[in-house]
Length: 629
Image 1: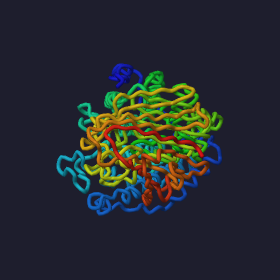
Image 2 (image 1 turned 120 degrees about the horizontal axis):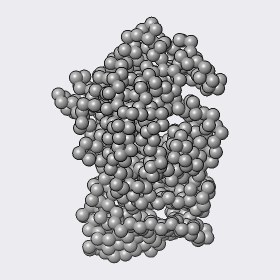
Image 3 (image 1 turned 45 degrees about the vertical axis):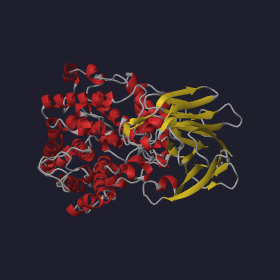
Image 4 (image 1 turned 60 degrees about the vertical axis):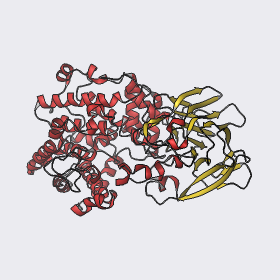
């Protein structure tokens, strides 16, 4: 673990923050709606699209969020039906605000007021899954405790949305209805800033050095926006910024020097990318004085996102991350620009070119820089770097492709690590194999979140279990969750001819497995003709196991008709997996995919191949070879 203690605090001392922070009225990160020249300078197509998005909400009837809908999470474990309405309200308000900024005629102001009023009248700005974690009166309540304001991810997001609404439209709203901007100030103060500044045991802070994840920078990016845009007391404004810096340092302390995100690339968008949001607000609100972009760790955290890129929308997706990721390309490009990394800039420009409009997906605080950065993005190099190799020794993830700069051929990723990673799956020693840019030996990912996902029954879910990863099953048991269930003796080697990860995964298994050593070696042999991925396992078990098998998760249909060969279907060329037919008996299980989160990634089904060892022994080894057909 890298020693990142106080990384930002050492640079951004209290004296430096106080000296360099611009005043609330001085800080103008983006033009307000009244600054017509700058909004009118946006190209006509952009302004047209912003106005059209807002027009969908003219005369909107703001859907109710009744208590019974909120209670569905406690009663049924369902969080998606409430969240659908919750997020629709917020996106509607953001689109109305941006539409008014683009058009500037006052046509959308009444609907903006309705949206502000609707959000301010909600009992809780967060979502049911995050409710009442700290309530002193009604812990674990099924409904919000309105006497205590919980600061979760989406309460903070709502606060920032209202803060940007105030900043952009304060003059227009204040002309007729000064009560509206006044209410925004009061509600954000009471619901976000006051509880943030007075409660020290929010779990996401990292209090008592508890591990933190994307919650920390994500919430802090919004707390910073609320503070810098709305806080009228200069002393409190400065003190809050200093507090944010202190707790961002706790987030950074959890990172290895490789900058790897153990939550996966899907969560990088709200981990490393939200850290960037925070650094940008600090940089902007200090006129560039609070600048940390020359720090090695800050740079490595950014580079992670192109190091795990497979091709197109596919990324290496360990933990709860999806294998398909829609990057906010403008943000990636700007991050790359700040750290002077041309590869990251190209990755961002490429992602932006694939995603259509670079705004309108998540947060208005990200929409604004995307809108005013379009010219630079359009002229940027937009070819993804598709680097040949990356070995992230801190999180123990290897990624390698057959040839740099192309998705043609084989791609391999493999991991070590431990089973207490953020959004953990029991997957120490698992791997992914890709042919021509399409994953075939896969990490399935995670289904739609429910109450069970983050409960004590998390590992009852099939996608979390090592039995549904590319791992052995010993005496019918798999790996267990916990930091002690980890890889040992991990080493990686990368050269022109070879990329290889070797590790002992025995310690990650349940005691009933009785395994003392399981050396796994996964290699991409680029120098062979044709190139191939080789899996080698050598094991020692205390006594002869009753049963022993190797499981492989496959994205396409598997043909076992040829003895010793698994033929895995793919959009381009199939993957041929050769195994010793004297050792294994293959069985293919079809797994139907009905989940709304997994189906867009894998389609209607995936497959689990069980290679059952015919005659298990206490010591042994096997070898599989994989190549494109």
